[in-house]
Amino acid sequence: MANRTYLYTTPVAPQEDPASARIQRFTGISEWSYAIPLVPRVLVSVDPRACQSIIWDGTPDLIAVTARCGPGIARLDGFLGRIDHPGRGTMAEDALRFLRSHTEPDHYFVLECGEVFDMDDESFADQGRSLLAGLADIDAEMEAALARLAPVKPNFWQRVFTPSQESIEEPLRELGLGYWSETLYVELDGPR
Image 1: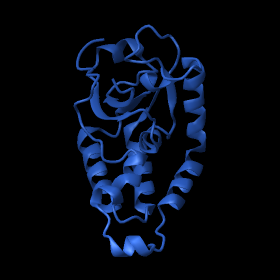
Image 2: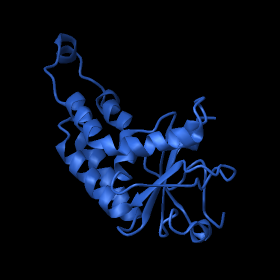
Image 3: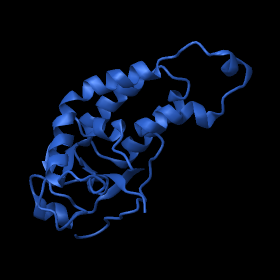
Image 4: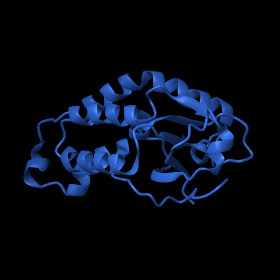
């Protein structure tokens, strides 16, 4: 089994009303194996709040992060608009179209990282605090990603052999683009 990071959306702020949140339907947005990529962290980086996991019932620690959808999508839109990369167009458009059609601006994203945290020896609580603290430096991470994605002059082999679309898109997929789906490995479609 791949340890995954999950992104859900819900109409109730889990950190403000845990009881109401547990009876709400959580809609899947995306999942990523073995990592917590930049894109989902950007989506929860505007006024993020730690909350209890909606997946890891036995964990009292605040290991999930929640934030309003509208500001997160706006921040991601600004970031994607600055990427100068040949694969950006379709992937960025697809991401924004999916997010806008599957969320409401006043709803909340819930970023669940417990399965990824479980691969590490550090405590869940410490990893949750580190994740939340790291969101304060997300601008520096976005700038570093933009620098890595900046076009470079192709070398001889790149001029001779046309790269595949898959290899062109790979750096963008590493950011967390291209994995949008309502159907996630952990479905949360009813009361928890």
